[in-house]
Image (cartoon, rainbow, N blue to C red; front, side):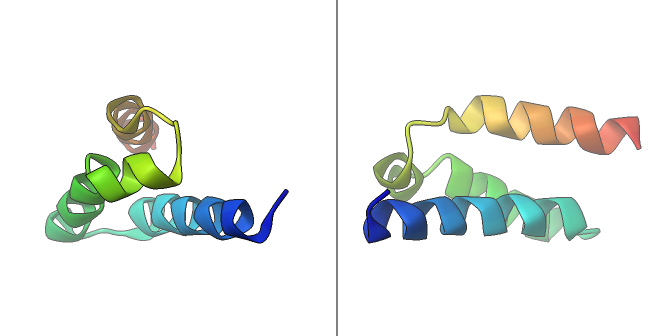
Length: 62
């Protein structure tokens, strides 16, 4: 894996960790905006909407 791909993966992973740890709705909304952003699409081919849906389901199951 090249260093840029490693960095992109680390950014995405940290965003997911931050989303999971956040208790404040405005923080989660900010992270969701990132998951929907053009910058997110530059970093990854992951579907941001699906990721948001999965994280919300995970949060609601707690």
